[in-house]
Length: 481
Image 1 (cartoon, one colour):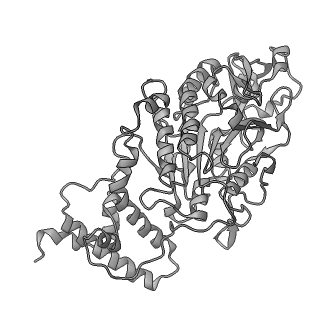
Image 2 (image 1 turned 90 degrees about the vertical axis):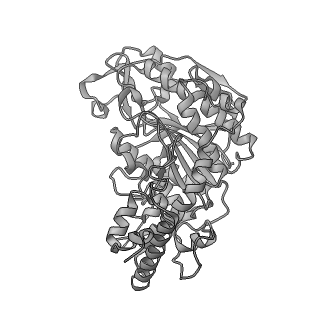
Image 3 (image 1 turned 30 degrees about the horizontal axis):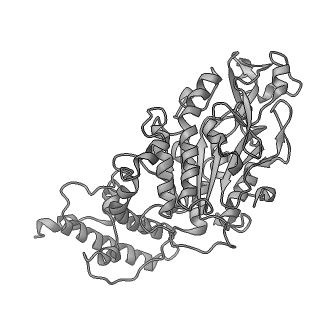
C-alpha cells in the first residue's frame, strides 16, 4: 500500500505526460533537483536543444527586439512623406491597380493626402510625421527602409510571411530559427519571448511565433507583463515536495529509458529541456517581470503613469529587462486582435493612427534611450514595422486599404548605420522602386547581425533542407555599419 505522498506514482507514461501538461511549471528533471539539493544526482542526461551554440561568424548583436505594429502602419503618413499626393488629392493616380485593393469597391482610385505634417529631424534630416515627436528625437539612430515590399495584402498570410518567411502556416518563425541556430544564453528564461497587446493577439494567434516543424523547444513563449508571467507556471495546490520529487524521478527514469531505445526522437529532448526550463522559471520569471524596482523616473519615461501608454510601455520596459537577462529574441506587439484595436485604418486613418502613435511613441523612444544608458545598444538590434503599409488612395473617404507593394520599416542598434534612409517608393508611395528590400532580404539581414548565414542555417524536414529565407534573400549590406 503506497504512502499518500507517493500515490501519484501509479500512472502510466501517457497519463503522466497528460496530467503534467496543464502544470508544466512544476516539472524539472532529476539533475535540476540534485542541483537544488532535492534529489540525488545520477543518470545519463540527454542533449539540451537550448544549449548555446556558436554562430557562423562573429555577431554584431546578441539579441533582437522586434516592435511589431500589427495591422499595417501607414508609411505615407508616418515615415515616407509624399507631396505629390497633395497635388493629386481626390484625383485618380496612374499607378493604381484595382486588383491590388483588398476591400474591393470600398477602395477607389482617389488619391488621399496625408492627415499629418512632416518635419526633418536630427543632423540626418530624416522626415517624421508630427504624431511621432519622441521617436523623431532619435532620427540619427535609425535606419529607415522606405522600400519594403511583401507578397500578400491579407493580414493572415502577410503576418505569416513577416514572421516565418512563408504565407502558409506550418513553418518555423524567425525567433524559432534564431533559437535553433544559437540556442539560449539564459538558463532561467525562454530564448524567444512574445509580448502581446493588452487587447489580444493578432490574427493567426500562436502560428505567428510557432516552431513549425522544429521541436517544441524552439517555439515562442507568450509572457504576461503582469500577474503570473506564464499560465500554469506555479505548482498546483496540494502537491507536496515529496510528491513532486517522486513524479519527477519517475518521469526522468521513463524518459531516459525511452531515449536509449529511440535515439532519433528529437521531440523527447525538446520536452525534457522544456521541463528543465519550466522549473528554473518558477524561481526567475517572476523576478524578471517585476518592474516595481525600476526607478520611478524611468517608469514615467516609459509612460507607465499614463493610461494611454502604460500597456505598451510596460512591454517595452520588459523587453529591455529580457534582453538584459540574455533572451535572444523578443517580439512586442502593438495592436489588438481586430479592426481599430490594431493599426488597421480602414474607416478613419487619423483616428486610428492618432491613438496607436500616442500609445507607442514615448515608450519606443524610452526603450532606445534605455538601451543606450545600460550599455545594451551595441548588442541589441531593434526592428520596427508591420506586415505591410497602407494604400495612397482613399477607402470610404477617410481610411486607407492594405498595401504590400511599398512600405516602410526601421532598424536601429548594434551594427546598423544610424541617420540614413534606404530605398524609396514612387512619388505616390505605391510601389517600392529604388533599392527594394523583400521580406527574405530583411530576414537575411537580421540573421546576419546575429552571426548567422541565412543560406547555411538549415533544418532537414521530410528529406529537404529548409531555411527561413527559402531560396532567396540577400543581406542589405549598405545599411550595415
